[in-house]
Amino acid sequence: MRTNRSKASVTPQLLGAFALAVAVGVATSAAQAQDTSVGECLKGCRNDAKACNEPVRAARKSCAQTCRDGLKSQLQECKTADDPATCIGTAFTTAHTCLDGCRATAMAGHDTCFGNTNACILACVPAEVAPCIVGCREIARACNQTASEVAHTCHDSCRDVLVTTLQGCASADDPAACKSGAREAFMTCKAPCMATLKESRTVCKADAKSCMQGCKGGES
Picture 1 (cartoon, helix red, strand yellow):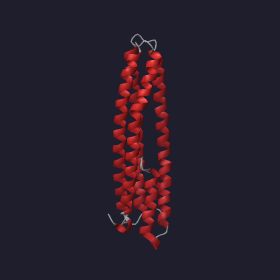
Picture 2 (cartoon, helix red, strand yellow):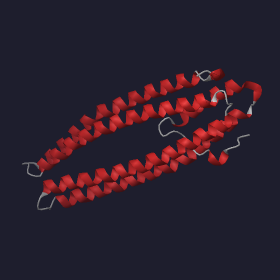
Picture 3 (tube, rainbow, N blue to C red):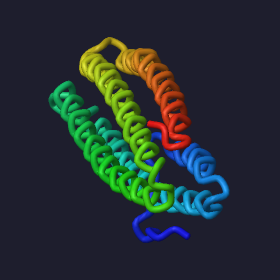
Picture 4 (tube, rainbow, N blue to C red):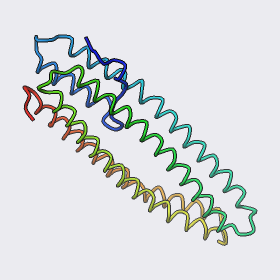
């Protein structure tokens, strides 16, 4: 039976259930008939991980919505501001700071969940393979976090162009058309950012699977 249930609350932020599913297969294979409870123990880790991460994701979603609602309200006020361009710039800066706060809080929560899951795995899995599995999870998390940071930077550069364009729309002959064009350009700009992120995560996932498969039989 799992001896560390109270500490086992989570999954890695980006690998999620995948890494634990692979861990279940690897650890159970390594233990074989030695301890048939290993698989069930790891399933408990996975359930605890889900329970830990879900409220963190929900809180970030709610936080982000509050930021977006604030931006929408501020931009509405900018329509009648004495200096619309400055007002628009301030509105986006405030929203960006707000969203960064949501992101940082969520990352801290997921980090706690990730660490708890590692502790759970170490309590469940035979000593000859547990460190290897945890090591693979750490590598995968770093890979995914790097991919997310690159995407975040890419997205921010697109946002900066959007803000500059919208500031100019305040004095355009057709402000509505200008704003529409700016938003379309923003969507076009950020599409490659998201595509690259998806590709990078696929690579991280494949590497994690390969790493964990190498943990069978205590290999490292």
